Image (cartoon, rainbow, N blue to C red):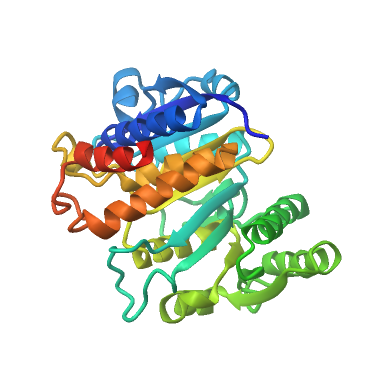
Length: 356
């Protein structure tokens, strides 16, 4: 049973992140009023501006403080005056790892009225979910340099997975596929013909767990290169895809462009037993900052995913239906400056429909 009051940490971040997050919060507040639950929102200033001012990405106390919240809503990270990697590792990866957000959940869904580069494909064809393991693989930082800066330099970065990491990600994916109740098909995306250690582990656990605990779920396997091909050629084949961190990072961006681009794609960093964090997939788009032309729908959809994960299913469904109505009947385009409306006006359009 869902709660009726939630403490939400809001990190607007950099560039256009705060503008988009403001529209997501606007819609969330309307949904809370309609469906009779409360949101206790607390803003945090983590991002490039804070780093340039304090030379600190986030204070050491921040992670423990964030553990006290029910969820985190993130805008965007990335500042033109901060070297790439500092904010991404210091905020995004740190929170994912320290809060053990071991699932990255990425719905790939084409909404009506949104253009896709895939010829002859429509909303009925593009509606699947990628479950990406979020704390292992090449992202663990295992490796290093030898003789750096010399002609003999060697760089090593190692993919690392434990049975525990693989098993919990697969169990989440199986349970999600069962709850989704669509095709009840889970596809493992790997590379067993080359990565014969890591994806041998994934494949063995996948079939052992599936046969023993989830006999009602059909299991399929695709090499990652084939997965990319079929995501373009026959996206309607997929229901749920589960994969490791690096492959998941790549194929979810491919999925995003097929659903209309970064302006509509949202994702969740999930800890089913702890605090999860939800964000639009796109970057901070600093060149559009303050102009009121950026598309906020990905941030709105991130808020929708947050409510769904918190148990406010009806509110989440209402927000998604509102977004679909706006894309189908109002927006000229999802591109910045080409929507036919300002950033805040798009938020208003969604909020009006959520209000009922």
